[in-house]
Length: 268
Image 1 (spheres, helix red, strand yellow):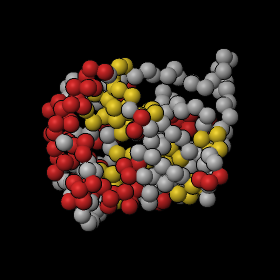
Image 2 (cartoon, helix red, strand yellow):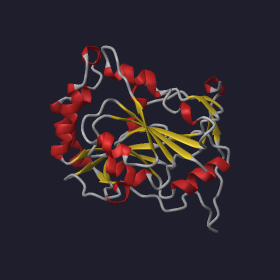
Image 3 (spheres, one colour):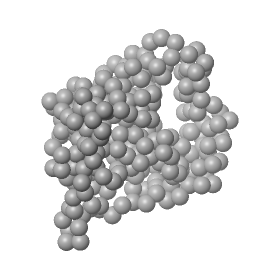
Image 4 (cartoon, helix red, strand yellow):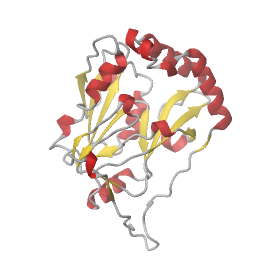
């Protein structure tokens, strides 16, 4: 079973080691769409044997709009090459206690499109090198806006249908989802105050005229960043880790749950 991952990247030298620490466990090939990083990101990417770097050119008066116009094409090189593909940002880690097993089980049941439950994660300080964040950094706050599609079958899905920032989607093709969501999306952007404030300021500075007019990227505002850090610290909980083998019956065999076919209006 072959899994490909497509991610956008700009100046992610600090996050990339954690990204690979997690995804190297099951991703066979990465396609990193880089928007002219000028830190050490490209060196890190060049050193990874499974990475293909592709240029991400964002033109016009909106960074957000330019990225949106391309994200639904990211995964197309994986058609005919992979059983599963995922599209994400470098700070988004899709998590299940045994993803290779889960993906294989989903494929065997005819599932083609796997959603996730989103969490905003927080740490008091920036993590240490070598940490596997989903295992050791488990404090976060449930955040439904991060309920994004995780993995999908590129042979069955003809159009990923991502909306702006992938916060929703209307996929087309042979769309079959599991009855229950078992994959978590852990969003690691609040990694200590110093890193969070500096990183969000960098991203805010990249916003263009239309972004500011439409209030796209509003979350990068310094006052909102500080408010969000306070809220996360006050409300964060330890994100429950499902036991390995979620969905198995008492005798240790996977207990199938009926897959759910999406309404025909979403099928192409």
